Image (tube, rainbow, N blue to C red; front, side, top):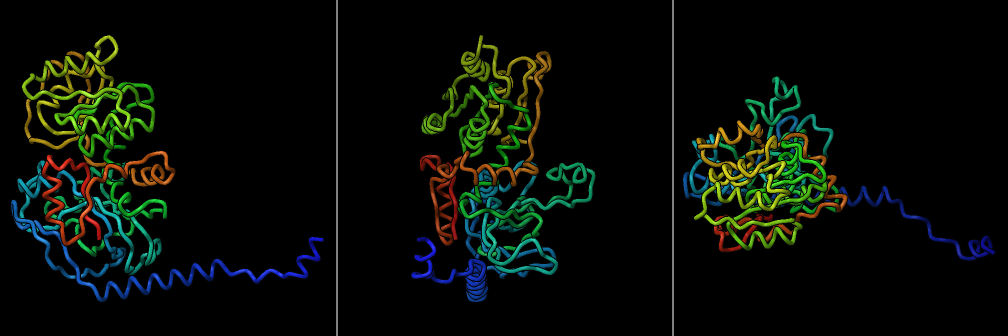
Length: 387
């Protein structure tokens, strides 16, 4: 019966998926090239402290080993705001006009000579650091500590806040279709969070303190919950941020009273732990001296406390407190080898951080985006500029 039905009603010839995909890709390439030729390029330029402008800049041509990327989404980092407001971030002062932004994703629009791992139309997340790949640190796998690393938006180098940029193909990561450009831009702060958790060696079922419920602190919380670290305590001065952290699964929240001493704050945090012994791991995500001091004192004997946030270059710490309790103090500087894992986490659906994007602005409204990110009263967590 099956054979007679097939004979009587022959099925239409199948359409070649390969042919259809190739045609669609060719059409996309033509569209991207045409758009690139017709459009102007604009960038968000920091000329000096408190002088931020959207300016027209040349459309860059990719050199050998590079590709041109049309940037689709860029997140505003706290370091971008600090550069804008204070003209420096950590040990890096602004010395010349520069573009800001280093949390970006986009689509490849042109290919430079020798690039064979990417093609026009590929969707990519941009890893902002470009190391030498030759020094001892790079050869040891710690390319983030390369002494000559060129990190986009860290003075004196231009950032990624432009319609079109060029970047070495080696430091671009393809993202699948189920990761949006906005999520692709979140891969940079997510990388910081992954690196922070790994830096202290936090493990399943062990206690963790996160000081600061800003974008990085909340990213750390998301990673910690995804890998089973528990209990997690998170602190902040803003009750709204703590309410958000509770919704994300924080086991305990603690609202910091600025009038209390760091000793008293540490005591209160310890009271949330088993036998008030303190947390096994602490990640200080604000860079504020008093918060770092409290985090150290809230860490249990033989625990580990790591500074993730960037604050004053010189700070006073309770040396005898951590030395005589054998608390390990560590630092964190960016990340390495995190993008592939971060992409896999988002693509799997096991980690959702898109909800952290609270505000979106079109590119020409970039100044409003920065004002929103800098104003705590807006309730902004992660502000993105989309193109």
